[in-house]
Length: 121
Picture 1 (tube, rainbow, N blue to C red):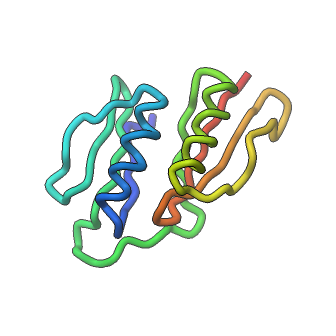
Picture 2: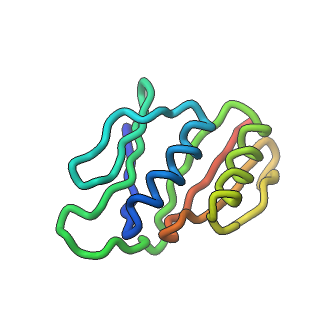
């Protein structure tokens, strides 16, 4: 079971604004501000964070790394994708059915981290 995931940011103030709105849309509120200047969001059973790297070096995108958010409806997937784009994210794949019964949408955040919103069924 996956408990939490984080992404790094070189634009932490902008990233906090981006994720405050995006996580608010999917009912994952701010849990606490991280000592790195980043922020942790959470709800029972799941946490997500945007942080400055612990080692003090620049954040970079992992090649093949993607964070997936399982949502309650296709409408939520559509809204997540649209909100991320409105906040300055980049489209990596319009919302749609990838295989029967599997609805996915892909975006990149302000630092290029890849995010997926999905709904099975």
